[in-house]
Amino acid sequence: MVVPTPSPIRSKKTMAIGIPTIDLSNYNRSKLSAQIVEACEEYGFFKVVNHGIPKAVIETMETQGSDFFAKPTIEKQRAGPACPFGYGCKNIGRKGDTGELEYLILQTNPQSISDRSNDISDDPTKFSCAVNDYIEAVKELACEILDLLAEGLWVSDKSVFSRFIRDVQSDSILRFNHYPPVKDIKDWETTPKQHPFTNNNNNNHSRIGFGEHSDPQILTILRSNNVGGLQISLRDGLWVPVAPDPNQFFVMVGDALQALTNGRLVSVKHRALANSVVKPRMSMVYFGAPPLNAWMSPLPEMVSPEKPSLYKPFTWGEYKKAAYTTRLGDSRLDHFKIN
Ligand code: GA4
Image: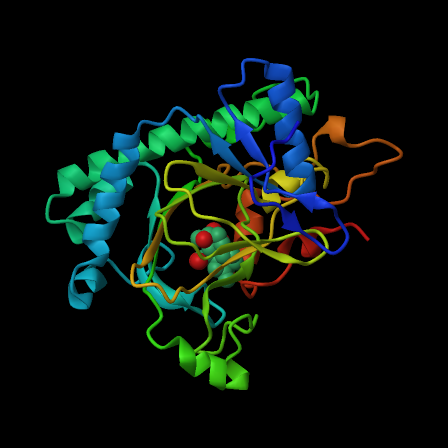
């Protein structure tokens, strides 16, 4: 059973529902795996509690992120531009998308973190240690969830998903997003073009922190401070705010997992709105990805005469390359669909 959150979300077509919450301390493994599959089929999104990641690992990492964003712009720019790794401000991707945020994107292998840490922190060793510890912890969490998913889907090879992100060549990344508070909310309320819930993230004055998109990778593990802003899109198109919870993690299905499961699990469309509160929102996001040469063809168990393959086989490298030619809000997987 998926545990509903205390304040139910009401959607046009559905009854009272909540964002699914998965308790990883549930000793009944088959029940747990069934819950995770259900959440990934229905929402492509869930919150995980009792995840076992020490608070100190999360807080040390948060301090590193906050210290970096507190630096003067000129210093932060030493870690940029983000092409695609490093510090970036407002520009997202290569096709002109923008958002009200600044960010830092890192490759997850220890060597590349160490190489970049001099431009990011005044104490590069401390920075590298904090980031490596955090990555190890969230990678393990992602692998545990992926193994449970494989079990719940009755796939014969239980490590089929987690092996991709455990691979030394894994293309996984880590991203800090920093959303400064929006100064004068009244401006948007009086100007029709700048409606708060616009989806047009090309508008420089829009309230969009990070526009609507699905993540291209396999699985995303997101943690934020206690400032809200994240919203997910339900199947019927309704946008639902996700209450922030600094002690827990949010998990998102990415496009690659949707392809591997032949569309049984769905990648979730999500976005982040800028906030009017005084405190900035900061999220730390791990994107678990396969090696560039790994094939993302639907697993044999997910294909049958009744459910033929929905997607042409592609490597992660091909998908990633194609993703960078799209706008943020595009449905990228559609390009790989078999008619
Ligand atoms: C979305 C998920 C990750 O944040 C990201 C993003 C990347 C970027 O910001 O450079 C992309 C976006 C993300 C998907 C489509 C392309 C690439 C911006 C963009 C328009 C780092 C990623 O891997 O894909």
